[in-house]
Structures are given as structure tokens and as C-alpha cells.
Length: 506
Image (cartoon, rainbow, N blue to C red; front, side, top):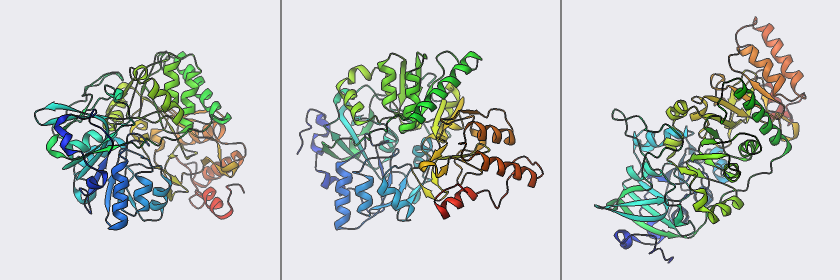
């Protein structure tokens, strides 16, 4: 067995066991809450043991995470057929296929809501967490029958799941450096009617503890693990992404010049993935300095901002850089952790905090429609891609809400601007600005018909602009120039044509 004695206190030494033995603590029908947010800081050994257990003796569990996790969870457990319900976000191909085939019941939630909804008893079986499985790099003795769990590369919902669970399984991962200690800020708000204001006024504020407190009596097993995070490489910053980054920077410069933003902007939130990372890269190559970040996921661009001296603090709930950047972080933990704070997603994604500190929300869209509605989750309205994640937490409450999309997809067969979104995650009321490689559509204060003309002009690709304008003008005439003109029989014609012919072009 892997030696972890230098990472755990004497109080839990007698609880060290194998992943297979720990897996026996999980029963059929249990609600299992795990650490992990993006493929970072998620448990690995016990989920693999659960999958093997399920191959021998079929059972089902409800899997609650922070967000997406790695293959040791979503691939292994899905293939073993042990997942009955899954929430709140995923990016795994096996899990996605199972969800879209109706084999796994998926609940898509705003990420800031997850921990409190489980504590309220609103979710599966109308029960809270039965078993929490969390990854740590170290366990410290707090005395009085309690220990402190030092998380690894994510916080997610770990603090709440540990607090609520009847049984806690702790994976001590020896591939995660103990130097991560001191980078976390664990804080769980009280539930109504006892909730108090969250005492955070700046991204750099520390409001909790650098560990997750846990009663020793709840710990059912301590499991050694030496399996690494499976973070993913980010795509190359292509020409379209570079243009979007430049378009954003120019927009910010104009806002500063007009006095609508301070010189160092406001706390930045950026979504997950290559496009989001490319947008941050645009700021790396700008003149902006003394930037602050209040976001979910910390990716390569944030480290680039640190390296070039432009970032004051980066608050998030997970580290999910590319494999190369993760190596750089591990080699320089003491340098980077001075700038990084990892919080529970209930705090990192808090709508109240986003509103109060004035977050600039920046997220990506699958498609937008001519009136400014955004679809960020479903292909042609039916097939789930990943989930809404935290974009809604920030979008409705940010000081400024920006969505990014390239004007075309699938080599030009898809227009990212359509007459009417096939699924709406963010309504027109929550969208201030849309950016594509073609330009910036500033929608603030515009009526629906004014928005349509700006979006078609600034965002839509010239290949599809005539079709969109034709639809808009005919809709205005057919509806008597009403507030939001639509020809209902044609509103989804772009999607219908794509499903029938493989392209949205006529």
C-alpha cells in the first residue's frame, strides 16, 4: 500500500484501508457527493473500485460533484452502469452519451445552487449526502475529535458535502504536493432563516479556514492514492480566437475612456475551455495592469497574467490548466499560490457576490439568436453538450455580461447566429455584449428589433447575414412590427434545414 504516514495525523492512522474496502461503505441508492471541479481534485481510487464492484454486483448511486471530473469517475462508473443520476455539470463523452440515450438521469443546475439544494434536501430521494468522497493532500489534527482536510487542486462542493455527509471517505493523493496547504479558503454559509451576509468585499479577502473541518467519527476510511489529475490540453489560440480577444480589449479600452470602467477594470470571470483561455490571453497582451479575477476555473491564461506581472489576485474554485501549465505550477507552487485562492463554488459562484463586487462575466455560447438569447448547453435544442455550469450565476448578476462565439461552426455549415435559439439558457435580459471574431455587439439599452440589427451586422457571418435579414424583415411585416417579431413556422428553420441536409445554408 502507498505510504501516506507523513501526510496524515495519528488520529486517523487507524482508518487507513484499501479503495476496495472503502467502496463497501457505499450502498445501493446512496447519494454520493465527491470533490472535483473540472478534471481537478476529484477522487480516483475509490470511484475505480466502485466501478469494479458494480461489474460484479450491480447497484446504482446518485453522483453529485462540483462540476466535471476525470475518467476515473465519469468514464469508469458510466461504463460499469452504476450511475443512476448525475449532477451538476459534465464534459465526459461516455457520460454525455449515456445522458443523451436516457441511461443516466441528469440534472443541469446553476453551480452556485448545488451545495445548498443538497443541504435543503431538494435532490434525489429528498435526502442530503449519504457518502462524501474527497481528495486531499494532507490531514491535520484540530483536536477535540476533529481533523482538517487539506484539499488539492479544487474546492467545488467538498466543504458542504463533508459537513453534511453521514460517512466521509478521504483519498490522500501523494501526487498532489503538500505545499498546496494555505491556498484554500473553506467557508459554508448558514442556511435560511439563519444565513448571514457573506463577509467578502474584495477578491483577495479570506473569510474561512485553509482546511475543511471534519469530525473523526464520520470518517469511514482513509485511502492512499497515487493517480494524477487528468487535466486536458487547451486548443491552439487560432486566428478567430485572437480576433475575439482583440475585440474584447478594444471594447474595454473604450469603456475605460468613457468612464464606465476603472483603469484596472473590475474583477474578471472567465468560463472554461480554449475560447475562454484565448480571451484571457488577449488581456495578457494588452496594456491593462493590476487586474483581479473572481472566477470558477483558473486556466493557463491566468498564470500568464501572473508571469507578466498584470494580476493582483486570482480567486476561483479549481485549478484546471493544461498538462504543461500544471507542471509549471507544481514546480513553482510557492510562487503561484501567493496569487491564488480556491474557494467553495457556493462562494466563488455566488450571485450576490458577483453583483456586489461588480464581476465582468465572460462566457462562451453554442449559439445566439438575433434578439440576444443565448444557448450554452444543447445542440439543436435536444442533445446536451456539457451543462450550464456557472455561466448563469455570473451572467444575471455581473456588472457587465459578455458572451463569445465564432460566427460559424462545422466549417461554415452552422451559423452561430440563428433566428431563434433552439434552447435558451440565458435570456436576452441577461446579455449585455456579444463578441465574435467579426466584432462586438453592444446590446445595452436596446430594444429587441434594435438588437437584431446590431447582432446581424456585428456578429453574424456574411455567409448568413442575407438569410437572417430576410427573416427579420419578413417577421416584422408579418407581426405588424411587434415588440419581438417572429414567424413561428420558420423560427427554427435553420436547425430544421441542418438536421435534414447537414447545413444551415439554403
